[in-house]
Amino acid sequence: MSSGRRRKRGLLGQSGLGAILLGAFVALWLGSAPARALEAEGFEHVTLALTWHPGFCDSHRRPPRECREPCLREGTDQGFVLHGLWPSLPARFADRGVDRRRWWREGCFLERPRPDGGFCRAHPPLALSAPLSDALDEAMPGRHSCLDRYQYAKHAACLALPQEAYVAAALRLQAAVNASAFADFVVLNQGGEVGRNDLIRAFEAAFGEGSGRALRLECRGRGNRTLSEVRIAIDSERLADFPAADSLVRQERGRCASRVHIATFQ
Image (tube, rainbow, N blue to C red; front, side):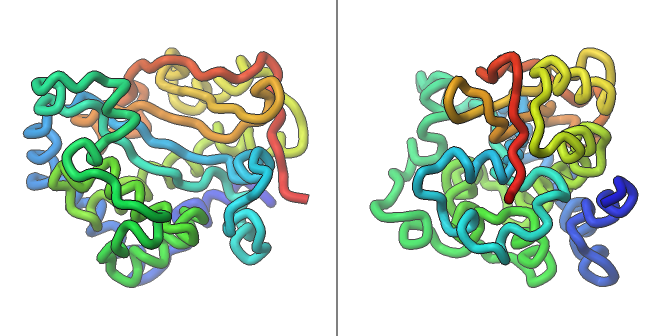
């Protein structure tokens, strides 16, 4: 598949009214009320977590539904799928003595403990418009395991972030990555092996010199050799500027081996 065709589908497969509505939701997120919510909570950045779906599935002995059913694996050669959008430690939690490690581990469940049961039983469905819901279905295969409900409950529910604006922002950021030369590099190297530093260089070629410091590579499997996810740190006040290099912030490197396998579905 050509990169041109892939980029067209990288905009979440939306067209017509759906694309207009999705654009409106993104504008809402980047507008006044949600922006003020970000500033009021006082967190410095958000982490966009994007999964390389074949690598994620290959790393599970008992893969979840979205890995087992072929209909949910279609289109995985389009790029990364959405895992989540994670605000960093909010100031009001830090003021209460919560450290960054505990926030990443527990998130909003610090205020409202996580209910017992799986994602689907424990968390109510998100209230999304039909176009946005359809876009999320395409972008997040894990939604079939109710990952979207869990992500919102853990990372956003306690921060007064509207569900639709939160989801639309995540989709817009994901689409920008999948429209990039970095995603092209990963897609073109499916089934092969590349250097960890080659992935970082491909990211910097796409997003600017020095931007690789904002990229965290996550690998699983024996020896941490199989790419499963990328995490990109973005300044919370510069979301509208992403993927400009100066909208990115430095984060810790991941634990991938020096040579990284990029899995593909058989």
